Amino acid sequence: MSKTPLARAVALATLGASLTLPGMAQADFIGDSKATLELRNFYMNRDLRHTTSAQQSKREEWAQGFIFKAESGFTEGTVGFGLDAYAALGVKLDSSDERAGTNLLPNAFGDEGPGEYSEATGAAKVKISKTVAKVGGMMPKLPSVSSNDARLLPQTFLGGHLTSNEIDGLTLHAGQLKEQNQRDSTNFEDLSVNAGGGIRGFTFNGKGNVGDDFNFAGLSYQLTKDLTASYHYGELEDLYKQHIFNLVHVLPIADKQSLKSDVRYARTTDDGHSNIDNKSFGAMFTYALGSHAFGLGYQSMSGDTGYAYINGTDPFLVNYVQIGDFANKDEKSWQVRYDYNFSAFGLPGLSFMTRYLNGDNIDRGPGISDGKEWERNMDITYVVQEGTFKNLGFKWRNATLRSDALGELDENRLIVSYTIPLM
Image 1 (tube, rainbow, N blue to C red):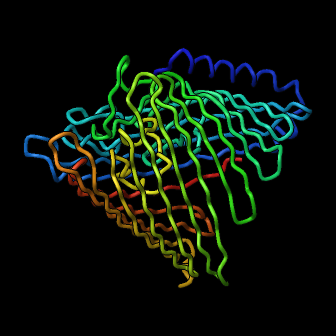
Image 2 (image 1 turned 90 degrees about the vertical axis):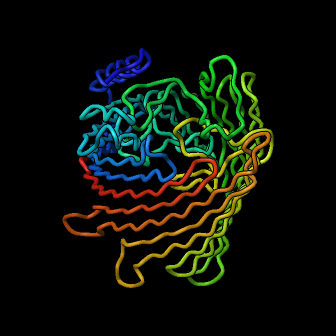
Image 3 (image 1 turned 120 degrees about the vertical axis):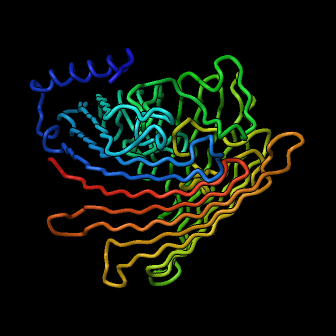
């Protein structure tokens, strides 16, 4: 595995901190520790129906992942110290030069790549009262930046993250990310903007779509037991600044009935070396009735460009789904969704989801007609609830995309995962 100087420094700092721990009170450090090993078997097939015979027509690969995560507790005292560790190994089970490029493995069309790849990070953390600061490897899950875990191994970052819960109902976040390791890579690299297949309307100068550090801050406050409001700020230096607002309300209607409203608005502007200018509005309403859930969503893009977010991450958009994000310049899209939990039939752990999205009004450039696209998804999931194989999970994800922007794609993902608690 290749490591940048920053990655090596983080690893050495974590090792140095671990050597000092034997002299400290370690009751909470050991007693509150936890570690898991996830075994993740992943098959993916993407039929590229829009390509010509001279281009790649299919991506199909199968791989096995081993994901180790460990989190210590904190040493006793006013200031507590702790350590986190992450290591992962991906093993190729089936691939070829003609079928590479699913993002399960570090390869591309024409080169099936190595038989295995690995990655590891460590992090040191400190706690005072209800405030925790962490420096090193991390997988943030915030509206401004959310690590992607939709392939064999997760996306990771190097940086610092402070989380505070000193006031009941209020959570504060602040930090900086310096580098990222993509889900199909072993190398940490500079942060960049997702170019969206070239139809976001972005233009860059200087270093192209590569930025410097990503600075973030935000707060989430539970106004009532049913209403939560949040604001998050993200800045990829030189490229964009983003303000994200979110309201989530759950209205109890009757026994086993509720209506959830999730409303999101984001304003994104350039930071000197791009033309990024976007207003994003999205709303998702979900009516739950017993084991059923019915969802209806709407998303609108306006401004001079599409929506901007760090390459490889999950954008905070209601219409971001299995393949598409429906976040192109001027695009308007809607979604209908249905979920069912089979526990009502005596099959706990079995669930089903299907949704359909349709987008139009995509600005594809001067002299080109507006683009359209639609996507259909289906997920079937089963997780063993008890016994020797408790938490053994099976998932089938199916998607169909027809897009003037991204082409015609048919996709299947089969995932078997099993998480073993180690302590």
